[in-house]
Length: 298
Image 1: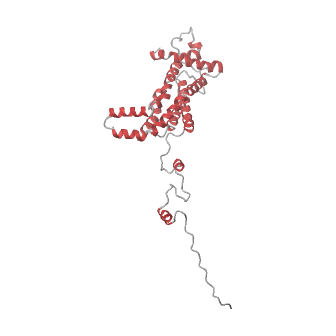
Image 2 (image 1 turned 90 degrees about the vertical axis):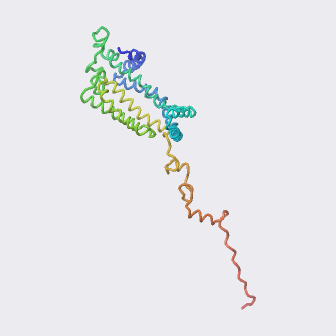
Image 3 (image 1 turned 180 degrees about the vertical axis):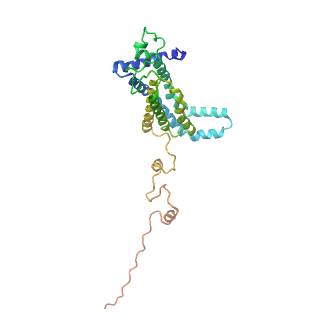
């Protein structure tokens, strides 16, 4: 067993216990148990995701000051890094918190990878890889059996082939692209392009992964897409539109004049007309003079 698997063995045993709970106690299939394991892991990471979103909000609000520092110390990279770190500390912002949910998922990914190659093969098909069998030390894929089958996938412990592989790759790429497209608009364009290209770069590697690992990856991508939408509605947008753009936020900040001025300032002609009118309103009309009647009577 590789050294990395030995290091992760406590996590492997922990997540295997969750899978066995869903399979043995709840009665789910092994494939459905992997999906619910994904739900448990992602639900546990929700606080980190909210923290990530709030950190991105804070960074978006501080972008003008960050750009000023970059312009001021752009020629001195060491001084720029020092000033940036001091700036983050003063404003209590962690620029690396946005990576926490992704980093936190890596142990789960590697643990499930080793489980599907070792431990779960013994659990799913004990007649082939169980204790006392010749393959116990180095378990082999379970093959097309009822226990290893899930939603058209013949064996979740082995790599997919044929149309099953094509469908899984399409689902993986589309779910990854959707989660990348739902990323906040403050993400740099070059970074967004990298995220959009990553699914295609990973294809040569994932086709050799056990099919159950692709089920986990597709599920976590779908969770990410739904979560980004819900967190955005709950917490708010990353950065509201700047003042003066004429949008909803600008209209709320600067309500239009009753006289029809959209930005609170009357046109030049109206200002001149108002200047002619005294503050107390227009003067009353002069009293009409009564004509005197002559004293002669007809």
